[in-house]
Length: 329
Image (cartoon, rainbow, N blue to C red; front, side, top):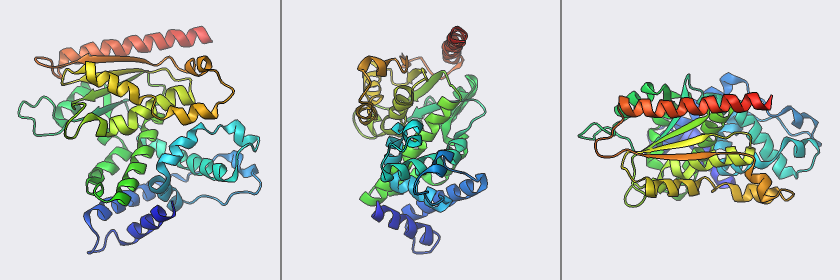
């Protein structure tokens, strides 16, 4: 952690200098944009921490931005620490500091994932497809058809990451690769928590990647960070039962679906271990997450017919959620 924080401090200081490499420029620009957003929102950690003994020093935006890149993966794991445990002082000092960092971060970063419409996940779309079937433009137009918004670049956080070219120059060096991975962990957590906070009933993921081979699905942000965080938010935090709808533009649901479903569980083992007084049955009932994969290959495309089919599924889930809510009242 110390070495990563030192690296963050160096980047923040020199990213605009003539000697800064491409990766430092990308990281520095993203850190600078996040710092501006944090300072504009006047964030605060959970008020429960005002009663900790000893009282923790107040967090600053500079520390919080550093936390994203130096501690991101660890802070996502800290989601399992309950407010009840903090209120009863049933956590050690290191965990308490992590909880403070996470609560401070959530107070400003999750707001940067807000969209006017439901959010849409995707992997493997880029301009250059000669058939214009799996381009960014096709993705954007389809999202509008179903009244959704791609998280990149339709949110402040998505635009900030895109402006830094998705940190594309930072994956050759081990240390900057870790900084980027921590950032993606936190960004994905924020995107998914934003969906959960808004009780989004259907999580749509458009996929145009092979499971194996070059630039494969398992290396994507969707598989590495976003889908695991959906599982964590549903079963870990609980009380969110989305339907995950994968639209596979390569028509390989038989491979894609099982690969991504396994990723739903990636972040749960450490969470489950901390819930020592829970049975597997109690853990399972925290969410009734459902899964569907639609093969879309050959003549199928992101057209009006597919949009209507998807929209019908989304509205049916919304109606089911409404009825469930009425029964619970």
